[in-house]
Length: 78
Image (tube, rainbow, N blue to C red; front, side):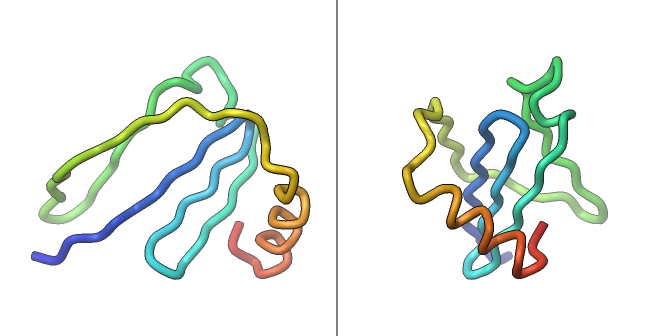
């Protein structure tokens, strides 16, 4: 099988997911809802294996976040 590195960042009602050079941005009230502290992996087909997982606590937004958010939204990756 092939291994992929996936980075998922969740803060407030926003999420950014990176898979190699692909970046996805999403914003929705449900992200910050009652289950904000759970993360689910869903799969169809044969499923997948997780080699390792690392969870970190988010700090403050970087000063460049507003600019980066606008770039992500303009490229249609949300």
